Image (cartoon, rainbow, N blue to C red; front, side):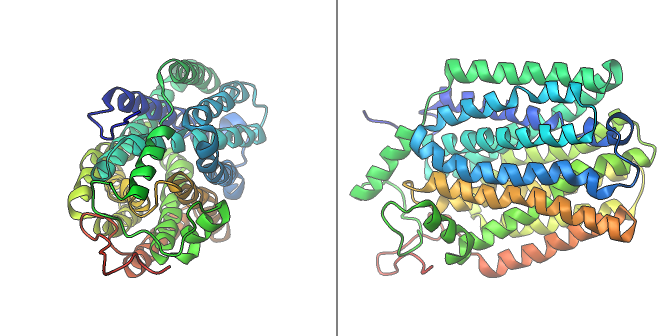
Amino acid sequence: MNLQHGIRANLDQFLHQLLQVLLVGLTIGMMRTVVPALAESEFGVPKNSFVLLTAFVVAFGIVKGAMNFVAGRLSERMGRKRVLLLGWAVALPIPLMIWFAPNWYWIVLATVLLGINQGLTWSMTQTSKLDITRPDERGLTIGLNEFAGYLGVALAGIVTAYLATLLGAREGLLAFGLVVIGLALLLTQLWVKDTLPWAKAEAARHRQGTAPHPMPRYPRNVSPQPGTWEVFALMSWRDRRLAAISQAGLVEKFVDALVWVFYPVFLYSQGVSLPKVGWIIGVYGFVWGGSQLFTGRLSDHIGRHRPNVWGMWICGAGVAMMMLGHGMVWWCVCAATSGFGMALLYPNLSAAVADISHPDWRGSAIGIYRFWRDLGYGIGALGLGLAAHFSGQMETAFWFVALSMFVSGALLWWLGEETHPGINPARPEQPPRET
């Protein structure tokens, strides 16, 4: 069976996968505005209990990171579609748990299930698109993937804020969640195809030396079929390029943890209404998602390294700016700045991993990168919670995150290099980089 690669050649399946990641974004987005903003009044979190407030994001990050690790390996054994279906099945109880929640610990438990869902489903939508597209389309592919996902996150935050105002927090989240998750299960079963055969076909062409594109600078001294631990070591320390990307992925999630936990609480405490809180946070998501239509494609032309480094610094600057002004317009500008920084780095860190990961173990590499990246939710939420707790001020968390982004961007600039095979290919006289 001759399987073609490319967005145009697989447009029908590509669009189905984009719809799936939109639904994935809607699922996590329903937890990002209403739940933290009403944690005190609706779910009994004591005022200024910063560490307890961050507990649900810490749980989410740890679980999602672990499931990303598992998802990549599972998808190479079970296939992409089965892992996607499993992720949606796990999500079904979440809206009911929020509806019945007698206290905050039920929200934490619901977020554990959300972490499993997101780790399995978002990993599969990204991996599946990379399976069926060409190397010179990776930036665009991941940009479109993350655009659809974070468009869903932003839309869900706004829609659920209005639903909570009209129907009540629990009622609004119940109705929204059941519709989104039920629709996702139905569409996956009926229309999504397993894309693992495309990955195997690409790997076969590489082994035969018939791949029609420049050879990437794959890590050296890697087994033909590396095990989980070998790929984990490559991603975490053996290859300094992959390690630099992994640490940047981990730290950039500090920003998203801050936006998830403290932006709603901070803005709500400043007298901003719940729908307006949804719109400010929505600006972050809309700019992040919409800009990736440009930034992902941009990296296919100028490379990944510069957008990644500049994205880290611009995103951190947007966080710091939140503390330097006041008012709806100013906070929207700050949210947009962070969103644009995220758009520069987010698709292109993943594209850089895909560039130098062999098709035989790309699913595992992406899963392990996403393990480190989404572990950043847990580490970042804990860090900003402790920063606010020991200082007694929520504002300290913003400075903690901004400084972390500047330092991490500097490490990425120092340790990383360009990974785009068309810009920095492996040469016959220059074997792939030492690990």
